[in-house]
Amino acid sequence: MTQRFRSATPLLFGLATIVLTGTVAAQSTLGNGSPAQPGLPWPPVATFSILGYDPATGEVGGAVQSRVFSVGNGVLWAEAGVGVVATQAIVDVSYGPQAMALLRAGRSPKDVVQTVWQNDPDPRPEDWTKLGRQFAVMNASGEVAAYTGPRASVWAGDRQGKFCSAQGNILAGEAVVTSMVEAFERTTGHLSLRLQAALEAGQAAGGDTRGMQSAAMVIVKKGAGVWLNNDVVLRLQVDDSPEPIRELRRLVEKAAEQRTRTRR
Image (cartoon, rainbow, N blue to C red; front, side, top):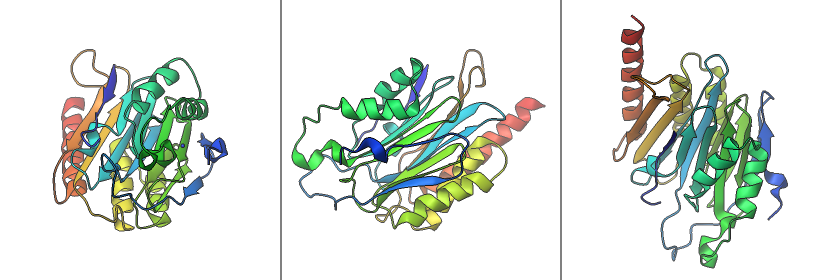
């Protein structure tokens, strides 16, 4: 089943800005968006997120933090054996299920990003253009593609590393996503700890310039959840907190304790 968080607030067409990585060294596509427009029908989901894959366990997942209420309610989408998606900035939540369906059909992350973006009819006003979308897709093998539109609110960009992709908008600067990739790559242990370390590094580098409010994490693998017929390894959501990343850390560590007890 697809695990999703639906958002309460809620890729120059040149799709050459799409980045595809597998086990290659870090690379990036960095965008300079436009400032947030005052007349938007909804606020952009200004945030930073990380997608990651653990080849040792086959787990795939993502984590996110933002200065919006309940950011996990629309940004992250995941399905065991299929992959994980983050859709943010001037967000169209339908990118999530569209991307998952294409991944399920065997399409590559690069193709998924290009197809979903090109097929976006973009019916909304000029200030809500699809040129402001930010979108990352990872398949169940850890291949990843990402797109940051030129109208995503500055600073906006994405960076890819070994089995990971960090992306964000309305950030303090490029160091946010760079630090996230570096933290993910150097951290050892369970995928949840690596995703958490990436969020903490992004925040330490300046994070979302508006501050913090909510965070979320989801990790999936076929049959790896607790109880029967459950593919959800971890699904955590902090909807409203002055320290959402710290609270997410507490939940991640609590989940680690539960895994240890289960193994006994």
